[in-house]
Length: 408
Image (cartoon, rainbow, N blue to C red; front, side, top):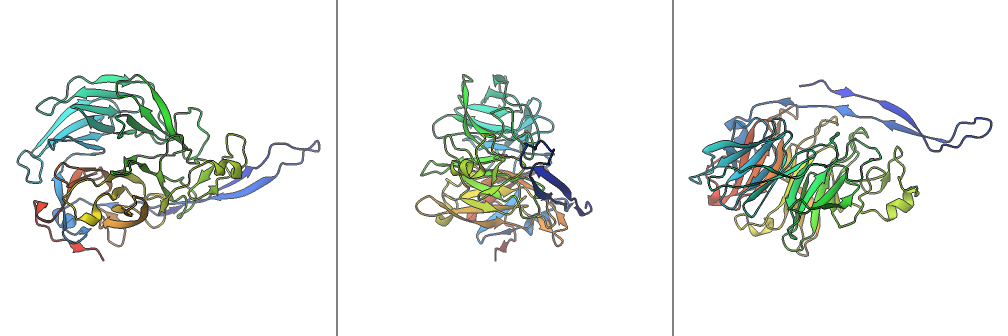
């Protein structure tokens, strides 16, 4: 376990740039940037530890695949074949559970390009996102891929948030998240810190929403078709700021980063680039519908569309909280549920699966990453810290009987 550190980064940020003839300093805003670094000790995901994970009554969680090094984003074909990316090696691996017993028998690398990360499937084709490129390949009958063809090769350069994700919307268009190049700054490229809408044939794209620091996980509500996503907050503002944002992402919307953060706070290091006052700029930005504990790092998000889970869980969203590094007491390292009401509006966060943090939060044996729904209605969850993919099932659909704890 790395030592707990406190890093004070004192800064005085100028609030104006006009000095008088007597060289009187401009007005200044005192501003303190602080933070903590605390990384739990990493442990292996042994069968005993997996069995100790706390799930709601009637649910099971088991290892679907393991030995995958650093599995990141997932996509699942209608026949149940799963594809998982490894952003470090730039690979995509096919996972197949041929006998449908809840465990993968076949793991086969099917693609490799630098920095492959985001995956999306549609009409027998797999779409793959790297830092500056989007590729497409035909899916063959045996699950392998044809030649990777380049659709786009001029996405914004990488920076602090280089992990592109992509999903198909109900309109048949591709949506691609482009994170910010920095913790907090005024971007030069208008496509940075945005969600882009792409034509699947590679013929064009546009900025769909902006002011999004790093929205890796996003999905559309099954009934209302409204788009939701979770945005990562700014680091080094202390343990409790900036809260993670749960946004309804609207066409043409601006979500405030880096000038307006969380529920309307002004970030003094970045005045509105438009020249407006904070108040003027805030009036035309979109506030989050919900916020979540700072630095939890939401990565994957999926609405549940299946029939396997009980009725109260259907049409709710499930989110992986990858886990913090920038706070004294770790947050995240869990899967949470976003409960929606009958009108299709989000109401609250609640824990769904916990227990990856152990030994009084001094150690962890997993960092949930991507989350997708399989054709049978189970959820598949990648863990890029321990090389595992988990399968979450309900009732008799659980292929293994695991002793689990009822959430209190």
